[in-house]
Length: 368
Image 1 (tube, rainbow, N blue to C red):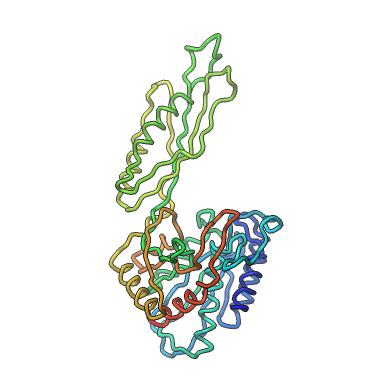
Image 2: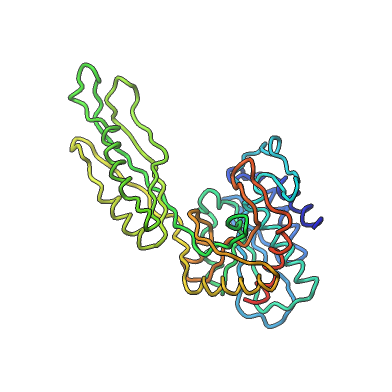
């Protein structure tokens, strides 16, 4: 365990916020140095964006057919300087630190699973490629094309994102994620001297938001959340402009299509105002297909051989596994660290679960 913890500490202490290209490059180079003894490593997209890391592993076994994609990210939500108030530390059975759970723990699991396969000379039937991107936490705009291209060459995708819950369930379903922006243009007027000449954009937006809220259907797993609202200029002016940014989550791709139609059909209640609707689905849902279920059953059997009961979960957050599953590639998510507190000061991983997660990933690479 000491080498795993030493690597994990080094990785956590290289801060890598999504919006800091220099910090991301430092982290990518560290990872390239760590994986290079095991793999042919390339940094992708370095001209225009912070790099994404691709590693193709040199593993035992001949005549490899097909490919397994290990998928993850090394960016975090924490700004530079977070370590000063939230240092990497061990306490009881946990390691704490920014990004330790989401998802630098998953990177550690991958590194040591692959090292174990090499050291034990275990033959692997397929090529193994690792893709770690630098922008998952902000939507994967620059990495999505790399992820989808690699997935199309793969027979299965194993996602190194954190597990679900302290029992360590893998994720066989994730909601699709998207966003919309509603912009309202009204007519400005003096709120005291010429009130009736105005057409309030903020009032129109409030009516629209009541209608948008009705799109939520908890039974079907559809949620619509107006998260950021702005409008107006001064309290004594009838507002000429207003806007809202809205988060959507859907469990099925068909629901996203129907939801989009509802947004596009919105019309002003006050004919003196006008609307513009922008946005849509960013990550398609990871649906529990038959292929996903087969991959999960394999993982369950292998976990049982290790003495571990492996549950499954469907969650509301998205990952890059959403992209690969939408292409029809069997995808199993949540194979990273067991812990809790992602994106919070209490982010942590359970130390005693690191060995069995490393062993499970190694067995999956042997068996898929």
